[in-house]
Length: 305
Image 1: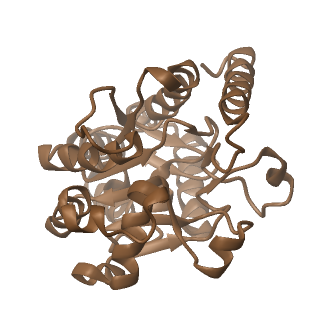
Image 2: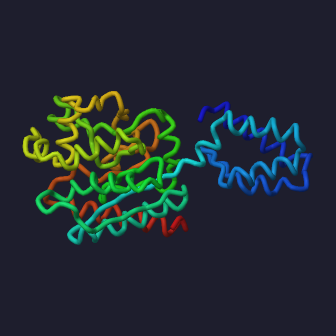
Image 3: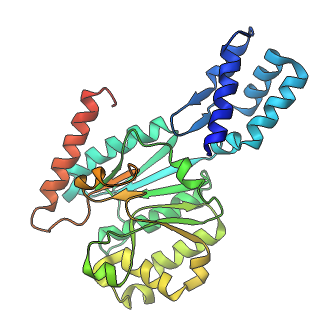
């Protein structure tokens, strides 16, 4: 949302709460939530219409409805979202905590959290479980967008609504993030990181996810077996299978997600997600637990959870 739109609604709020305290204004204000980064209408369209009509009369009602719909606030708020996670017992010591952190974010922003611990594959690494789980959720048809987040990642509880991110390009079927650029291999062969991504519920998205999840030829012939699902995705994008490049947007590293705590001081804005990837194998499990429990305890101390 542009700054002039936020200013416009702020002025409207000032008008409603200023010297003109209409008898039914509280109904309208009760259905609006104004955030620093985002504005959401939390009620039904019928309740909004009734409140406006009762408070301001027919002409003002028409004008204000035009304001709400022209600024896309109604569309933002009616966007139904789900977030998916998968983890198994070996990582549950920290994944159960990232689940709690992500649940707090989801509850704050009206997102349905879907957590699975039942694997689909018998012969693939657990990282692969994201793709069939995302496909299953899209095929249910209950949501406009579905968000994937790895079990070693969490949304900052004070991050703005992910709807703001989606609205940067609502025409795209997939929103991805570039991988950490500090790795020599990544610098030579830029890769998408699949630790967090967003999928629009379209027929194209579901067709692409089916291919990504179940095409055995792609799985067995990937040039990046050590990257699991991420390797096959990057193969598909380099080959432009199903003309995928016309359907994606890729955010720069550090915008949607980041990997290391020390980066926060140097990034131009705080990312949505802390993804604890890129650790040395010898101590990564300890680091993930330590970082996760430290953030969780900070949330508890600030009464954010």
